[in-house]
Length: 305
Image (cartoon, rainbow, N blue to C red):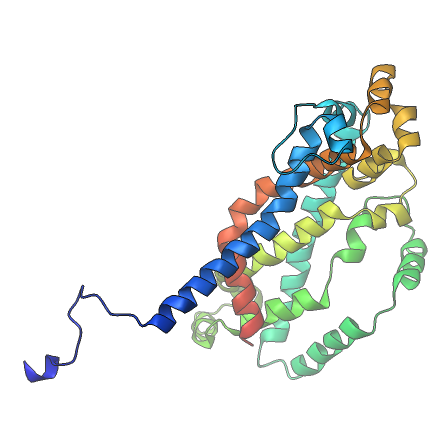
């Protein structure tokens, strides 16, 4: 017993590290700090620009520390008559679209993950084919017009509901679930739908949160679909209204006289920065709740399969 313990470090004992290990740690820490600065600086700069004095912004004196304090850009944006309705439209598009993406993608990926489906590999290859060769914008527009959903909310939601990449990632995640769970459920008399709803989906929170986050951000930031398919300004999402606010002619026409006067004394960069903050603020509120699932869902769904 005593001889068997020779050469083993005692619990709690410090392990000496060589110079190369310390240098590696230093390089890693330096690299991570550098990445943190590169990713954080633009965000802080945008916030600083949006609340700084117009003169300081025009002279280029603003960094991550605001120069003065001015909220005129936010007043002009938040006073827009259609901002509230556009926020509600975007929430409807993002929530409805995300739920549709998760339901349809999971119901498509689950059969493809079953080994008993003989054509699963062939269908998966067809999905991969569409990732490299797609119809494009014009055929999609013609289909939307042919099914008579132009100028409706469905035109914004439906074209982006299914994605070959999401299907393949979720299929890989489903295939990582042990077959013994499926077999035990089948022995208890469960069918495929029961296994999907009561076993597979509860175990797939990580990949669902990851794909759901991508879908939510995609719908939230999308303005091109609304630009193509919507003509009713009351159905415009937030990004379209912010785009209209950014155009000086539209801003002057829709703003009241006081906001119009403030616009004349406001830097364009200040307005752009305030628009960015207004657009990304809800995403910043949602992300912390799904962050813990994000890395796990991406790694398992993309490596295993």
